Length: 414
Ligand code: ATP
Ligand code: MG
Image (cartoon, rainbow, N blue to C red; front, top):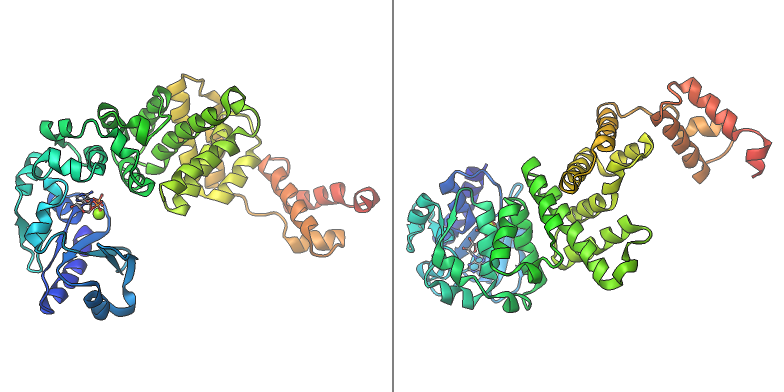
């Protein structure tokens, strides 16, 4: 798949070269190809061409996501994007020298040849994460690179961090507090896809936790460790992190009265605010906010109907994530897992046998002799609930229930 993406991007590079520009694939795609990593991400292309040239070559397909300078032009392909940016500097060689890490500073030309001006291949082979050039200078140019160091340490398997790079990345907490939240959010999200525990360990070592992940407590770290051990799902790891940060935020704003009433909803709201500042995709942020909101249900004693509603509203993989999150939570807190296990079985059962509705809206209207309206939905919901709770099994049972509960003067007058 990565190979496919690379060859599509190479076609763009080739076209730019035909027009007389210099161009190459740069960044993570070349690195990942070398490492044999199958992770799929967008492919970056750097070029000497201007934005107008890109527009005239690919016309309406081009989306300019940053007007710049430097601009970014996105060319959507089948299932991924090629992100075209102008060279940092005048030439490809200058561009590569300005990139953050040696392993991120390789380029692939249209003929497939790899250009390596900073010994990136050597560091890739030895699996060393090292700032490109003078570490202290590179980090001063852009302190976000300290965070990127922790992020790449988390996502690049079996890499060690070069000593000089690590020590240059210390002491940037004040500069980091001025950093746009979207830039921080992008790196945090990438890190959640990798070894989230290693990520937070590096941030701690670099003194960046308070600034970047305020509220990250040892409890949250313990949950994250269990979540990371149990799953690759970034959603679950991110939910652990956001839950901890959101609770800390509420506590700070409201003191000891913070944890009274509607807690799940408030934590979800605070988590959502953080993710929205980080500019995380809405769909992902909703998924995580709902995990945070509903996590307690996996440890309590709800009707199976609650799980059926959750399954219907958020889908199967969300429900699986919910149980992973709740499991990590219970393990870290040393809680009893019996309620969790009982609920898990209920959910598994629902997942494999989502029941067919026993009645339709038309059935209800006919039996009760009523017209369309919200009442019909309410009655169907009651039937579904009784079915999920095992009180009724057949269509006949359902009709009997509707007749018993909803037919007759007392109900219809009320
Ligand atoms: P991923 O596969 O996770 O996207 P990536 O290496 O492509 O990893 P990006 O954040 O997409 O990471 O950045 C693309 C490339 O742009 C990097 O490989 C690096 O060469 C360069 N780059 C990005 N951010 C910086 C920065 N702050 N300073 C210097 N170079 C950077
Ligand atoms: Mg990338």
